[in-house]
Length: 441
Ligand SMILES: Cc1cc2nc3c(=O)[nH]c(=O)nc-3n(C[C@H](O)[C@H](O)[C@H](O)COP(=O)(O)OP(=O)(O)OC[C@H]3O[C@@H](n4cnc5c(N)ncnc54)[C@H](O)[C@@H]3O)c2cc1C
Image 1 (cartoon, rainbow, N blue to C red):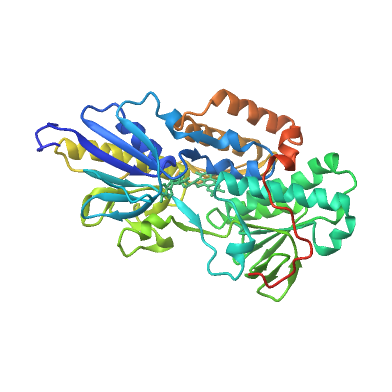
Image 2: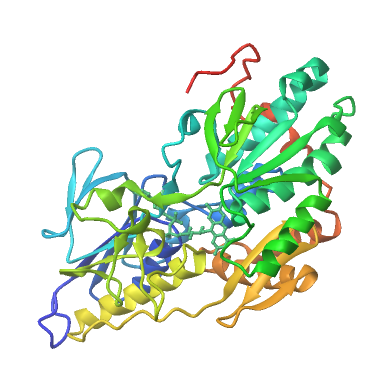
């Protein structure tokens, strides 16, 4: 390890989490003389979350957004990838303990374990709602949609049991994108596969406690999203809480009960459990409040990044939970570690703001570009969305040609789907017990 005058012995870095932040950090450190990185991820693969709803609504296969970490790093010197679940972290000793009991020590720790759904203690939500945070979640949503259609095709009376009611919780980008794509799947794609299902009775209902969609965007952007969703037949229940989720219904704060067999939860997130396993008092969203240089206060060789951290920026208490924030913070942390190894101080993180964007449906996207939030709609917003996603995908070694081909197909033939994507038997999804009613929360 460095004595400040240069690198004498090997420096070890343990990175927890192979998401945008962890991959970017480990890639930046790869091949550096005297630096050895161990990248730990409980799944062993990177899940490209921005395209989860496309998997849920049968636009992409799960393989399209799942990237094997060992493959990403196969030609990256000095990086060892291990599939392991980190159960506790000792910041003082700079060690992590794995679920098998093994403890790894490092000179530098990088905590980048991301986020998990936050059900805000809503009764029954954890047990009965479908979150959208992992590839497996997305497969299960698709499996449920297709199983409902298969069952209704066999027994149309199930419509009276609310089989064709689909509820989305959350009016942020995840809820809006999922609602738009789901409405298009139901009305434009599935009638070709299940011609006897009366899709005229289908309802997609988006519920949010807030009074506007896309609250991080401008008021006009929220109004544009609402108009586009209305156009696709999505009903909005804004200013309304979800009070309870049961296997066959959802109860709203105003007392309304909606019979349904699919509640997609896009209602919020909190930091991964690792944040709470560090022995620190955590901040907003259960995240770790980091210093401007991304280190954990009092621990100059421990970094927390991406969705696990509240990263201060200018007057803002924290940057948003975005792929580009995570990716850039990963690269920055690596540069700061290299600076520290060389005896230099770490530098405050500077975020290059790409803007925020959401895809509401085919040919209906919204983007607010750059720090001044220049607003784009439609085709231009779609192009901006493509550009930002290409950069994120490029870093994790995705085949960009294949992604461009998908984007072109999506734009020109939005209602085309391969048979594989619409085959529920390919998804190991439980059958629906139509006799199960209420109270199983
Ligand atoms: C549905 C959805 C849509 C989104 N769309 C967009 C979008 O369009 N644009 C955008 O910029 N952002 C989007 N985001 C946000 C973006 O995906 C996140 O901000 C980003 O993934 C955060 O990166 P990260 O590296 O911090 O965490 P993650 O990407 O979540 O990676 C964390 C990794 O840590 C691993 N891990 C967790 N716990 C442990 C443990 N105990 N031990 C070992 N490994 C562990 C996980 O398996 C995971 O691989 C979206 C998020 C969601 C959920």
